[in-house]
Image 1 (tube, helix red, strand yellow):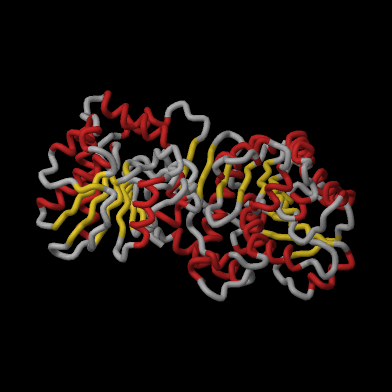
Image 2 (cartoon, one colour; image 1 turned 180 degrees about the horizontal axis):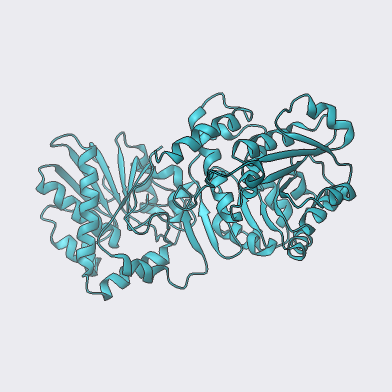
Length: 507
């Protein structure tokens, strides 16, 4: 999978549409003319276009009425100067262009064709119609043009964002270009990573256009939400010292369901052990102990019938990370187990049945977490998320996935991992990470249980909840990418050593 290369000094940070506007404004206020920035953006597009065009090939450049169109005019001029054949079309009237876009259009020496004309055959289409800041659904001629681009039989290079994709949410506004590649500027935007926008971007490229780190800092100053691209560098995995031993590496406890419902807990426990927890114990009803014992070796077993048994078990403070939910069963008994686990004040991962048991009662769950001062990570998929946060502002209609997860984290007082092809990890303090490092082959029974175990294992080793959640999601995704077709949940823990070796070796 292609990993975008981001400008030095701002790696992993994402810019909302408004933050990007502030970066541009700060750069201009600092003495960099807007036209200079536009020239740099157009040059970055032209450079990438040259990599997609055959020698002397034909480029069809579609320009919109704003600054995105101005970038297109610059790219068209530079390609023409380099000897490529360029056909430029403008959506709107040339005389209606203003500011830097008008200046860029003046510097274009060739003809400007109308957008409504049938698209000419080309070796490459450059989509410079609308950028990340599109604020309405496309209709009329704009929509028809986007649909014509998608019917064309050639590569498409999008400028900033495929036209029709909302830069903050990744939503498709009526219709959207399906790009082969996308060149954006300064930093990625949330819409580059959130679905369905991510699927429209193709290969992503991030160009440094010279705004500078001071302007970047001004753009992100004072934000309630701090957005990151989830990947190594955002977090640091635990490292072993010469004196490390199993007791210094933490002890994760995974609660199992009754007999014939034990597999999910074992998958989670295997994940916790493989990720580096020094000890892992599965606690289950006595009737399920033989079933678990038949499958487990390095993972220990304890009997636990109810919340009182769990309370007695947690007198051992070495049990420093707990995972509840996979195969545990739903209902009041599970709620009681969660209450006891939260009251112990340990690192806590709640998934599956532990979340569904608090259907529409997330504020009760939040109270348990707050009163016990537990460091909690919740890992719902979409269905569990809606059930848990029903009736709260986290499920208001029309919210971006990042905003939903951020509101949920604040309500629960926990880190929320909203799973999916574009998993979002949000902390109650406003930090949000978007993960695009994964594989659809991870959509298999038990995969989420392993993820819960990976996070619990990292928590046991002392990682902070947000960082542990982000690292667990990325490592889980990397394992899926390595295996590919045929992946089942049992494969994931066995892939983790290779993932860790590569990270430790810097590859």
